[in-house]
View 1 (cartoon, rainbow, N blue to C red):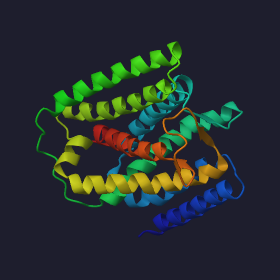
View 2 (tube, one colour; view 1 turned 90 degrees about the vertical axis):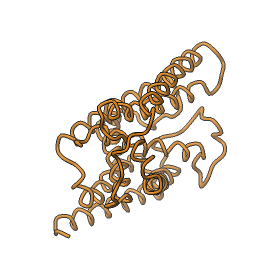
View 3 (spheres, rainbow, N blue to C red; view 1 turned 180 degrees about the horizontal axis):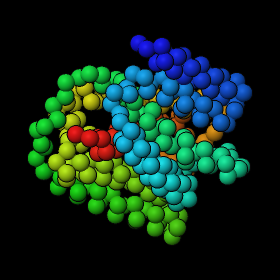
Length: 264
């Protein structure tokens, strides 16, 4: 391993440990920015061969606009009201959308690729009717998004905001699988169906190692606080179980975007 890569990993480990200390011991509500930078410094040296500059740039703006502004700001905070941040300044939200969301997306992709390793993957065999299934699902999910968003402001159904957020996330996952399939490129879903054991293993490891690292310190720091979520009182080590289930989307969505955007 090159000295620069080793230095990057060492600095990353220092930042990761520091962020956890700041969250748990000092309840510092900006630990997450430090943590994500640390994780990227750890993961990038061993996964950089999977990225080129154009892919990185396209993914950055994808995570900024779709995951950050649309998913978090519009559906998570305004429409869904399923969480809030303990922020008081505009600069904190600028960091959230221009740093946390893009970098967080890269962390999930890099984690997935790390656990996938150099596996020989079957990805050429097309799955029958996959395009049609994805198109039907995307139409259904966007319809449900509209219905629950409407119910959020016209009825007393407690979890309508939560469901509108869930279905927009599922819609985006499907779209990022439909786009490459329509272009004749293999999508995350197609490669998953051709390599179920390898992809499920990498997806679960990336999901739940990150879920623990990211969510547990926040139990103390409360940088973000969940509210109005289904089964919100059922918790595991202080984390709502439904949030842990939802972390699967936090892996599948960015990884699907990666396969949709990258060359080949």
